[in-house]
Image (cartoon, rainbow, N blue to C red):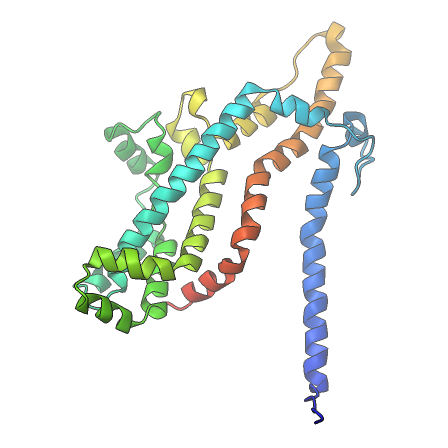
Length: 297
């Protein structure tokens, strides 16, 4: 028995080739800066300072990584950023689900009014000074909670979660659970959340990246260096710490300047590594979550 294959039209084949070429160009444009940064971070300070590094390490060296990881401030900042990312993600995902789930239920009275208020806060905010006064009056200044609570809920993430719950969970499942005597919390825990793993993965990725890269809140609310996240530590190392010394220390100062140039690249790699490790595990859920959030019905 012979099978016949449907031949794709010439126009479709050409369109597919053009799309693949465009994606290849975008991939190259994205990878080139990353490869350049990694190559510079593994090169010797004189080679980087002389501009001899392109996309492959020159005079392979780990001096920049040794200098970065031997700094106690970097290790403390790494520890603090891990705490903020893990705890902040857990708090943010929990609060986002808690507010998005009732807003997705058609039986929830006033859900449209609440959603309008939330969208209003996304478009208009009180500003930095009122927010600082609220954080100060709550006694959160110079505490870890100042990094976790003020930005705990993102309205965009609430919209994505609400749309997912409304469009992806059949009403028949709610009705069946209610007939079996389940409460709303039991329905959320036993029915909705097990079916929402793609959504939870996308929310976790969004909040983790936000918490990991956040530095402005720490700059405003934190004074204790032991609470600084990694981003503030990197800022202090790259911007505030400049080599000092007289004429007798000229050689040492020149080496510090050269090392500082390589240190920039090494710190970028160090600070980006956790996100690069996490992303492949949730990438397959990311597109689905974003496409669900694209419909605001």
